[in-house]
Length: 208
Image 1 (tube, helix red, strand yellow):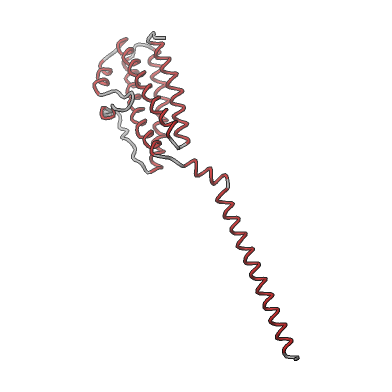
Image 2: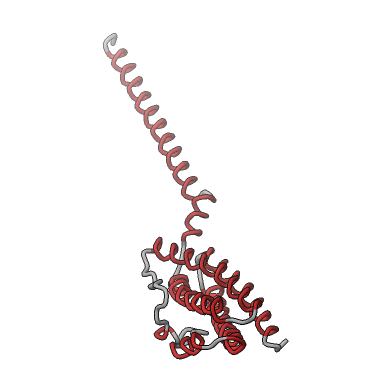
């Protein structure tokens, strides 16, 4: 009898220790699960994922708007040499200042997405891109290059209005179908700025 009691007591202590260990382990697992879930579902983690999300439309917008802007820059450079109106030269300068940084921004997006960046060599032939809204073919660009004075001013403004209208169309598609926030924001800026310049160019042509 005296031997059985210590054995029974020892068994009870072992059982109690085992139960305590299981309870502590369970608490530790719960705590780890909660912290993991909290990190995954935190607003900052969700926001980071959303900010980086993009779709095919965002890629197409960037790949097409880059050469579209490049052609506008070509036309603006011609204006500095051939335009007779200071208003036209000023407009051309503003177009260059606005669109050069936008090309760099879109180029950065494409590189970060692992997508092809359109060739940015100056003077490149954009005739293959003439199916994009507002793009001039090579014949149009050659005629503009050969013109001067008031004739150049009229041709430049007429062509740039068409060009801007094409950019607004492309930007509107991006706003409606794109997913990447910064691209949709840029599209909105393009729509606002280029619609304002269209109004300005129509006034210079005496249409408003």
